[in-house]
Length: 272
View 1: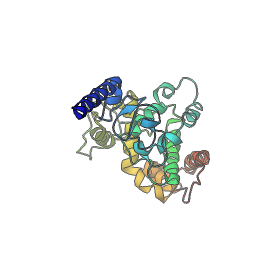
View 2: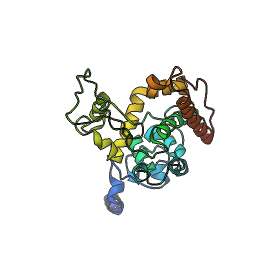
View 3: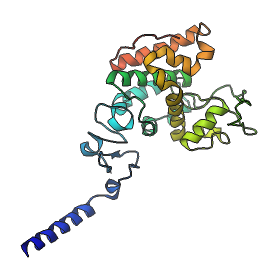
View 4: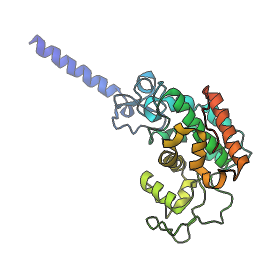
């Protein structure tokens, strides 16, 4: 009889505890609100028990690891660092309100391999990514390309046919261009890239996800070859092999500056 009473009391207490926990904390689908962390056990909330060791997504604060799981990206890309780039843009820039650190971190949750590896490798990749973003957007100023006359339609890419009246000029943090990139990014991320390419310049979440999709698809694999290899992947056809040496040096300048801010050496092979 005593055992039965003890069990009854235990179940009652567990029920009370469960009812006392907010619904957002009880969620186990890791689809937490932007300001909440998904703990190692799949619960949403704030504080060290959610954002610390094992944090799976959100504004994690634990050290080590890359992408959304380990929290190194959120530690490296601080508010001071992100806004330090944006604050150098002129007044009236569309990107001032469009690009946010939270938007970037939320997008990173979809690409856990970004910034992965050792602490130094993580810092170098993040420095490289933001070096190109800084150059492409004028310190997070431009949401879309200034020159909108070119449709960037490659009719040979039949898998991703250009939609009538649509232009595939540069948009977003890495100024993604061409119909085949919009089409593939849309398919991977979940938006209609071919019929609605303007979404990249209107939806902040899609914008950073598109940039990270391009990075992880085309650039991530060569980061360990040096920053010069990333320039080759981003815009090598127009800039490398002596075509635009000043532009290359500008990208290198941003990269080395960010590496210095992160306390890591820039490594070898800086130029393409």
